[in-house]
Amino acid sequence: MQSSTTKNVPHYEIMTSRYEDHVKITIIGEGKKIDIVMALPDTSKYAYVGLTGEYCNLKNIEVETSEDSNVQIPIERIAPVVSYINRLESDLPNIQIDRNRSVYTEPVSVEDGINVIFHSMSLPAAKLVWHCPYVLLYYSDDGRVDGANYREYALVKLSGENDCDTIYAENSMTNNQSSEFVDWDTWEMKNKEGVECHISFRKKKNSIELAAEDAGIIIRNTTRIKEMPKVVYFALTGDVCAITDIRIYK
Image (cartoon, rainbow, N blue to C red; front, side, top):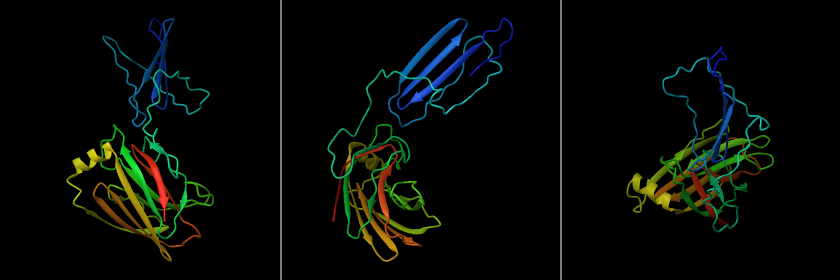
């Protein structure tokens, strides 16, 4: 960010950069250079920069943005990494999802009768019902999310939503509440404390039936795939949550 270079008017250059949970601001002007490094509470939220002051005018402000890593300011870490996945690992590596669908588990092929049990914990920054685990059904040539010939069939959120009707599949979902469910405030509190989640799959000729349970929310989702590939994959992801101790069995 720069102000104009008018005679007798101070000129400042402000450079900002962010890496994960650290932000660095460098201010250059009037023969001085100031470096400020800040450690954020976590990596899940956006960080913003605003200009203000006292008894002054700010004029001709220019803003430039660069994604070039060679241009960004190197940031020295002043606080340790905040991790919520330093616990038991089972069949798949643990994942911490700081932002919506920012991380996925390794792909697993959907087989009839397969079950998945895992521990989920919404991060301290979680404030919304959909800050919880998601199950993604998809296809790609290499099995990776967004791989070659990627086709997304369903995105089932364990809060009881499905965000993915695409040209490749149609979904039909029902969700119910067991006696364990009290209200949504209690459900969110339980997810922040940590819950055990259970998912199961039934695979038929051109459809996949998914059943899931999270703290009293019971989900049934049927995905009808228009052109069934030889293999359909699932991966766990989510928003502002940690998924650990992932166990897969038949």
